[in-house]
Figure 1 (cartoon, rainbow, N blue to C red):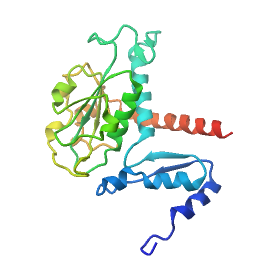
Figure 2 (tube, one colour; figure 1 turned 135 degrees about the horizontal axis):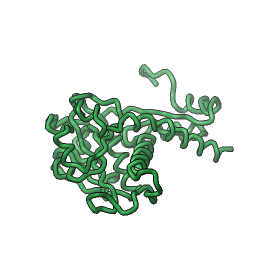
Figure 3 (cartoon, helix red, strand yellow; figure 1 turned 90 degrees about the vertical axis):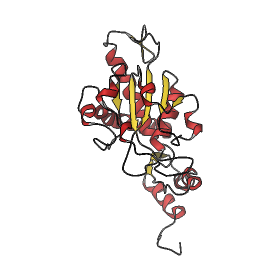
Figure 4 (cartoon, helix red, strand yellow; figure 1 turned 120 degrees about the vertical axis):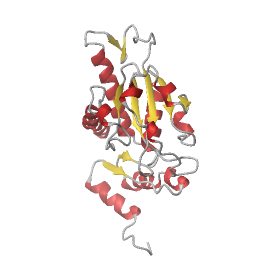
Length: 254
């Protein structure tokens, strides 16, 4: 308070708690101090002092509304592929996939980027896909780009992207900076960008990204502009995921 900050969360949060029924908060990591970022101090302070429900719009650690959206989008896509003729059960096509697997193969692949980004989307996607429990889940990234193991436990992890992509039904593309030596960029190999050539290794996979995306850095034009891309549908589903969460909170508050 003796610096350039004019108001404390302890004072601002209860005022906002009197103004609103729900607070939705997005926080940004420093990418300098892992302990501070992963403590989720700011969101926890708003929860403590506002006295009303708090929804995370993204934090240093997780991006839950995005991950809910991703599950909705995957389930919706599976239902559409089943033809809408009662060929779906529990979100999965009855009879399995063309590869003979009873469950879809979902791959989270690291992508290059021009600056250091947080691990929140990768952490959160891994956490939700593992909790969903209806997919064979593989995470692929260069060496030294491991995510927080508390979120990835249960996934298969490999540094061989081509091996990971083989027979994949969904490919989620996202960059993140290093977790162990926190917030660094060690590798920016453009060979990790997803292209049509790499996509041919998959089972006609649908391609996902949380947006915004750097074209021809993270994802090639040829993939983004193809029928394989469902990023626009994914982004649009953020509306319905957020509405579902807010409606559920308000229902319990009533």
